Every structure is written in C-alpha cells, then in structure tokens.
Image (spheres, one colour):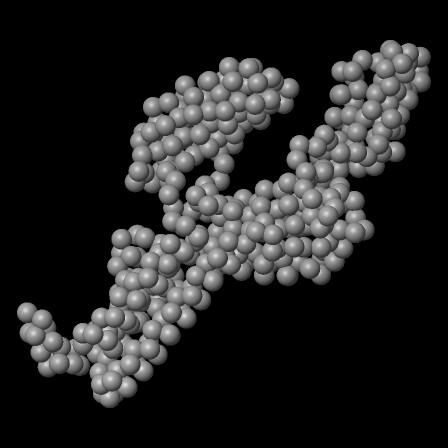
Length: 407
C-alpha cells in the first residue's frame, strides 16, 4: 500500500507540487487569521447581570433585586446553572448555559426577560446592566497610570475622558476597568446648626442643588422666518456658583446654599486603590471579547497609548505590568527556532550520511508541510492557537524530524 502511494506521488509529481503549494498558501493564511491566546476557551457560555441599588443592605438587595431577577430568568432556554451574589448596594446574577449555546442568542434570551422584570424592581435600584461578553482569560493588559505633578482626581479625569474612550474603541476590547479612580465632585457639606437656624429642610437643599445642576429648555420664540429655541443655562460647575444658589426666601431675603453649607471640591468614598511606581495611581485592566486575538488586541492597545502621549504628557504610562501576549510571542519564537533547527539537522544528517541532495530537500519540505497540515486540521476542528497547542506542535516536531530522516 505504501509503495503504491509513493509510486503514485512520484508519477504525478506535478499534482503533488500543486497540492503542496496550495497547502502552504492556505496554511500561512490560516495562521495569520487564527486567534492567539495563552490558554484555550475552557469556561462555559456565561452571561452576567449587575444591578446597583445605593442604600440597600445586603439582605434587602437579595430579597428585592436578586430574587426577582432569578425568578424572571429561571427557565431561560438552554440555561444550565443560575446563581446570584448580593452585597451592600449591588446584585450580581450569573447564568451559565449548556455547551454549544450561541453566546449572542443567549444574551438575546436574557435581554428579553430583563425587560419584563425591570419595571418591578425598587425605585432606588438602577436599571439592570448586562455585562459585556468576556473570554475565559479576559485580561489582555494591565496599564499603570501615574503622575508626579497631577492629583489623583486630575489623573482620574484624564483617564476617564481621554484614555478609556480611546481604548474602548479598539476592536476586540470588551471593557476597560479602572482601579483607584477618584471622581471630582462638588460636595455640599451641610452645617446642622446653620440649617436649623434658617428653617430650611434637607428636601429643599436637595431640590435646589438638583435644579442648579440641570440643563432645561426655556421653550421657543417664533419669528416671521424661524423658530428660535430659548436655552435655560444654569449648569453649575464651580463651588462659588453653587454657593450662590437660592434655596428659599425668608422675610423677603434670599437664603443661599453658602449660608447653610460649605461648598467644596472633593471625591466620593474610595472603593478600591492602586499603587503605581511606589505611589498613588490608577490601574487600567483591559479585557477582551471571546475569540479575540490576544496579540493583535495588545498591539492595538499599545499603539493607541503611544498615539495619546502628546495629549497626556503629564501622565506616566506603564503597560508592562501584566502582558500575556509576551508568553504567546515566546512560544511562537520557540516553535520557529525548533522548526529551523530541525530542518538544519535533517539536511546536515542526510547530506553527510546519504549524500543525496534530493532526499534532503524532500525531507526538509516535509517538516513545514506537516506543521501546516496540523494547523489546518486544528482550525477545521475549531481549535484556536494557544501556548498549549504550540507546545504540542514543538513536541510533535521531534517525531516529524525522526520520520523525515528514517523514512
């Protein structure tokens, strides 16, 4: 049987050449398009829903938010496991689906059921949010942001309005989480004694501060040629502007926020923290979509950070804290080195012992063709390229070299 195959290959060498060239072209094209990751996708299809409810205790969050969501989502098609977690002011519901379930179809099922239950949640609860789909190893890069001249609030402002939107626009990026964020706020620190003496209630203070920060329409004025919109400009951005806001009138005299409270720029209570370069800073965690190419996403993120440097000169960016793409690049380099070394050893041994150039050439061609064939088979079986697959190919390369010499 083997002799017939060899005889047919020698007789139809042009056909074999065409098949080999086609295999090489398809193989290299497949390698370029194949998603590269550290490990294969091992987690089941997952959809997570988070609902914020400021002010609710853990028990209230569980009974008023988590349980109604569970009841509404239970029975979703192809659902395998449903679990929830409730903490102070936050509910998290996780749905795990059966193997082979289409991710986007599962998210559509969940979204339809969320629309039915959202109206039954407490008024204090924000609308349920479906988290973006993430891969099993979602984190592709950790970026440290720090500054020697800017405060933590200024760093947070630059990051949230300049860096994060740019990174979120990169194909393959699912989310950019920020640790150590300090948002800038206009804070109203009420003095109880002054509030009591003025006869003003907290409800009046809340209403006045809300009106001062709102943008509303003043209607319109019709002219013979056009309709002109009247804009009511009352957006307060400075402490002194907010302090001049009138809360009420007593005996014909206005009582302003500054009369009963201290207006200052501050930050909300810290939830997390980050230490970058031995000091305060922000940690950006870049997460990717399932099946996204880790190396390509990483390079695109690094290129975007390089483009932003002129606009964020006062910030120090460190993108080397955690970079999984380095593991993949080293694995690919090891495979390439093993491939070149194996081909050279085969050529050397065949030339020294057999002194046959044609046999050496055929054996050298067999090594890359075998690896390209393996890549095509793995791609057809929907197996992506990762460090485990590459390590297996390196090990298999020894058998390929052995067969190329002996056979």
